[in-house]
Image (cartoon, rainbow, N blue to C red; front, side, top):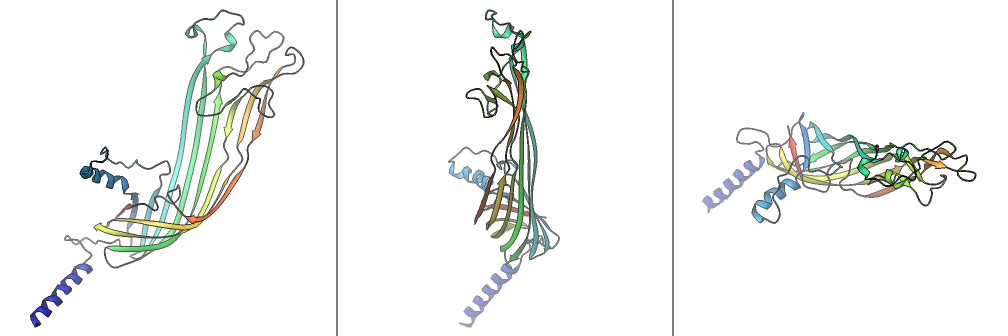
Length: 315
């Protein structure tokens, strides 16, 4: 009986010692320490990749660091001590794209000329340039609990998000109003339209613009978001300073979208038979929007991956 009790006590002692031994066989600490930095990424694609080796339920495409959506955010931590970490997220994106279309030189085609094969006509180039700037910043503090490989944490953070986008259009055919001495007037036609954006308005005329019109610039309203959230999560250290975990948050979010501004140009007309026609421009503003939320959060451009399984690396 005494031997049995001794063996049980020894077993518990060994188990307890093992549970408290938070170093690897090489003496490396398992948990993050004061002065350590951390980086978190969504682990789901990596787990799917490994799981498909066994289940074969989908094509086993290798994951990359570019698997995020357009809301990709760099999320990091700095440990003040073993139980306290400062955390931050950042996203700064500056994007510019252009589309170039060829169109007939309408000013060079004489009225009444017999139709010819399009490739033999003089051509002009229309250009659509889109620029987009995105800024997301967040910062907060995290407190940790737990003395084993399983660590819980909680805390709070605040974040802002900005999105600004502008479209600019340059047309090869300048508008020419009809009138005395004008051989080939040039008006707005659907041949100047681009796919993926509304830059032409031919029927009915837009408010404040006489006749058909085309946009020269579309400036979308600036999107501004502000949020304050609390969060709670847990992670399990599978290797020294490498863990799997996830978190959820709840908080307040405010967002506004400023009024858009669109600059249009068109051939106006007054009098009879097109007399006194002129090329004019006008600017039209859109509506403003705003919103408020008090709810659990999800994946967005400020907080990084939330409510998802994370791979955490500390160094």
